[in-house]
Length: 366
Image (tube, rainbow, N blue to C red; front, side, top):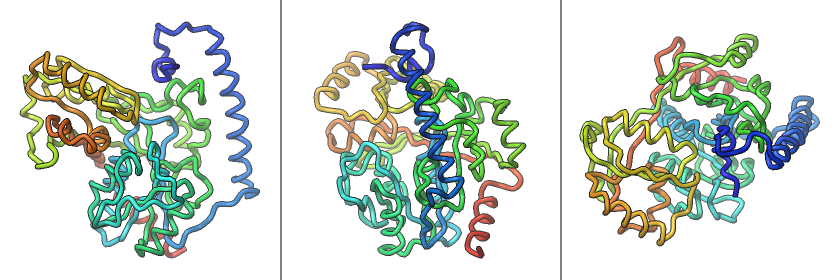
């Protein structure tokens, strides 16, 4: 099995020139042609986007995983709820086994599906957003219609939908990791880019996540946003606290100062999680990373327990997304502390909140 992240990061363990790399490069050329043709069809209205009966906001990215879409969706939904909107979140439900065209993860009051059926990210969104429906399914036209018809939602948040042009969106938000906004600058499968960089021109705005760790903006992106007059906002991932299931016991991040911890995760960018713990002052004596969206099994958990017992650490910590996949293993989960991470928008003029509300008001008038 190819370790995609290490190859995309040009890890020295992978030979720079190899048959595998050559094949991936050729496939990326084919992928570019397909994406260019598809986008041209939409741009020329040969293919048309379907409008829903209420405004649609897409939260997506240009690269594969790890930019912080889930915290952004949660923060955006809470912001809209605060201003009197009745949003719903629709998602493809990556990693979930829900086979129905429309899967109701939550009606805003009750959570009906687990991570295995809904996917870990939709379940995390549902648990974080009381009062807001969360729906998954492969066709966003159907899930969006379900949100308006069943729940009378007046704004739809489309999770991970920048490339999904079959549904019209009034606001297209694109997230880029400020430290590595374009990955290795190559298209799938040779790199992390889902589309050519030129397609950023479709965005309504950009959010540079983890922007507290760098002040520079990539030169290519800077030229493009200036030419297209695309607003750029900056955000950081704030480590709020530690919680435990099921009793919701909590610890502050200050409690990690100088403490020995073991940590594990199955996310796209485990190094960012590790750095966050280290920045909180934790003494990381063990860090185990799994593939993104990893489906843990009993033998994995037994191995982790034996591993952590050998270190006699003060805390065992994982991410909220991983915790969603561990709900089926309550005996293990109750031994683990969960790091709660939220998105903080940097001050700007206009603010991100003002930008969204103004665009929504315009879309309703239109």
